[in-house]
Amino acid sequence: MIDYELKKTDDIRKDMSNLYDIVECLRDPKDGCPWDKEQMPRDIIRSMQGEIYEYIDALNDNDRPHQSEELGDVFLNLFLLGKIHDQNGDFSLAQCLNDACDKYIRRHPHVFSTTEVKDTEEVLKNWNRIKQEKEGRKASETDFFDGVPKDAPELERCYSISKKAVKVGFEWPDTEGVYDKVKEELDEVMAARTEEETMDELGDLLFTVVNLCRKKHIKPQDALSYANNKFTRRFNVLKQLADQKGLELEKLSAEQYDDLWNQAKEIVRQNH
Image: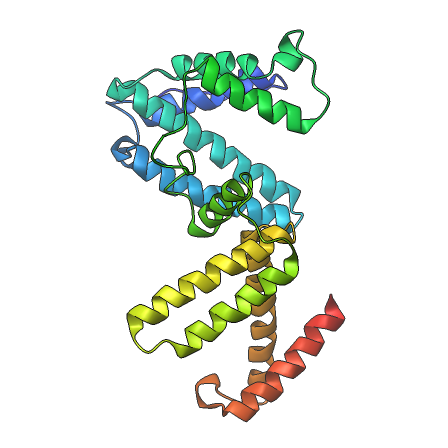
């Protein structure tokens, strides 16, 4: 047992220290939590991804207490990552934070020095120039997409890839061209004959739809999240309607599903 008493304050620096103290207790080699002591960086990353998605859910639901809770969970996972790297001898959390402070002061000379900027575009140009000239982070000569995270969710990665290609002029002249490309790719999906061809053409279709999202200034993950939430709301209402009629979903005909779905759509529309 670890003798620890939490002393809450209104001082954010002391509160952050409290959270790190708790992390140190959890990772204590002798008296810490067996589960927490077994965790490694890749374990924490999976956990933190889940917490971030739960925070996003709370944000979309405008649930502030839940937002606060999930953001706290994100901080806990960040501190756990820092503590694990420290214990592994990789680097200390202090080093990590100091390096971050140095970097963000260096990359914001318009805030911390005398550099003047007119707009966001100039901020980003300075940011990239500083990365290359002062930090030596030169782009790969063989991979134009160097810098696009390879482990990002594929929708986000696709969006980033297309944005980077557009910066050098690889772009449709107008949105109509993207509509035509979507139709072309859909036709090719329908014409595919093998599983490999179908996967190839579906990938092209999805890639083009992501570009259409970009053209419309909509993040594809936001559009898909909206569609997922809309579908689940409608399907839950459909199930309620079926239950009220004494119908089993597994035994519904296509016509019954269609009728219940249209009723559910109308109910959801009226309630939103």
